[in-house]
Image 1 (spheres, rainbow, N blue to C red):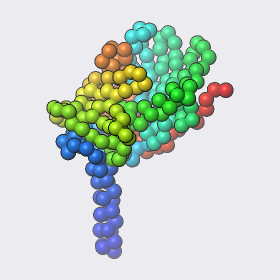
Image 2 (spheres, rainbow, N blue to C red):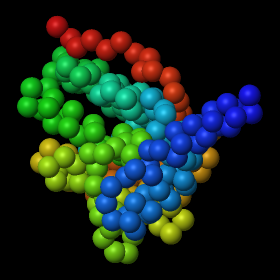
Image 3 (cartoon, helix red, strand yellow):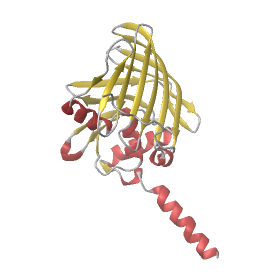
Image 4 (spheres, helix red, strand yellow):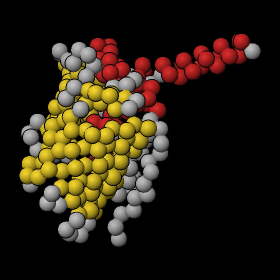
Length: 233
């Protein structure tokens, strides 16, 4: 019985040590990403979780208005619902494997073209939230390269640019950037704080000032995506 129990415990240890330990790339880059994952609550919880629910309170500059955001983001499949509630107007971004579309409070919905949807699906793989999950699970599509002193660049399949993290000596993400269609996104993030079972930056801001926000709720869970999204007719 003791031998069986020891074997069982060893199997759990091997399972929990997999994932981020299998990341490819520069040894120093892998170590820095592992430090970031540890700082954010650990690779195990980020790799096993399927859902991230977020609430933000922020300010957008065009049009200038306060905006509250609620986001349901699957980490396991490209399912998302992101609701922006502004003082002047509301808009909701929705995405599934098959389609992505916008819903507006003051006009008809807009369904993205096939080309736009393909770009949305591609970006989902390496957006700020999904890519933390993918790094934690040791996604073998990713190769890491260190750019001194503390920036890690991510390459996807066939050398595709999957963005970068600037990570400080304590493992906190300081800046993140990635290509999105014809644009390059870049955000700066505040010091992390506890949100339940993980740590996460307290705030973020696009470096061009377009969107500045505080995270009021960050809930990472093993639950499946809870919403049934259907594109408009």
